[in-house]
Amino acid sequence: MKPISILLILLLSISCSVSREIVDKPIVFDNQRKTLTLEYLSDRYGLEQEEPTIRPKMIVLHWTVIPTFEKSFDAFNKATLPDWRPDITSVSGLNVSSQFMVDRDGTIYRLMPETTMARHVIGLNHCAIGVENIGGTEDLPLTKAQLKSNIWLVRYLKGKYDIDYVIGHYEYTLFEDHPLWLEKDDGYRTEKTDPGKDFMEKVRKAVKDLNFKAVPTKPNNHAN
Image 1 (tube, rainbow, N blue to C red):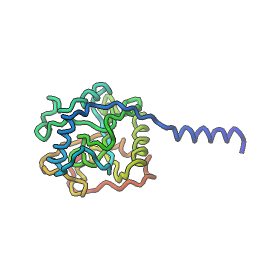
Image 2 (tube, rainbow, N blue to C red):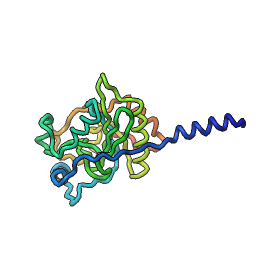
Image 3 (cartoon, helix red, strand yellow):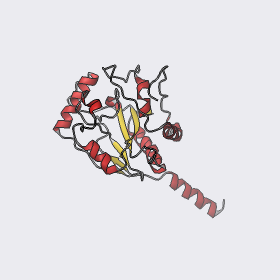
Image 4 (tube, rainbow, N blue to C red):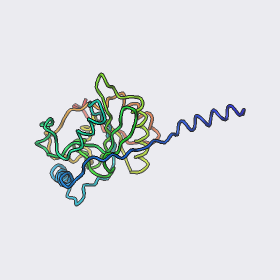
């Protein structure tokens, strides 16, 4: 084999295995948030715990529909829900959040420890790591950089934890009859579309070798 060909193969190998940095930028997790999280685990799931920890079994991909990282971070930072979320305040005052947030340039931020519960998906927060992606509107579709970072992050998390599923937020109700589903209130559901079916298909195709379990199927599914 010619030296030039060997060099090209080496360069391709390096480019395909580029490591990404995770930037730690923690949101507020004070005593108030800890108390609210423990109450959520108890009230919604019947889990009585001394610490708000989870045993990750799935990764849930989202979009924020908020145009910038700064505004998205601010939306999650406080312990309690803001006034603009009256639709879910009656369920719990705990603010929404996720363990990770991916900016439009692909930068991966870790907002909280991977094994601390975040409120990001009904029925499954006790076992799910959330990944929020900045954008998601018609004017700000998710980027190729975000796709690459999500693929890398899924691989990273699968390597650390015994994770069985990677799903889009829009698929969460497919788990209603699954052993992982713990939500007590049959009327507490919100319809989701994030992070888009095309985005999920591309992620799944890229991590097919990790052999995640197939998402459950059921008739008359309302999570479109």
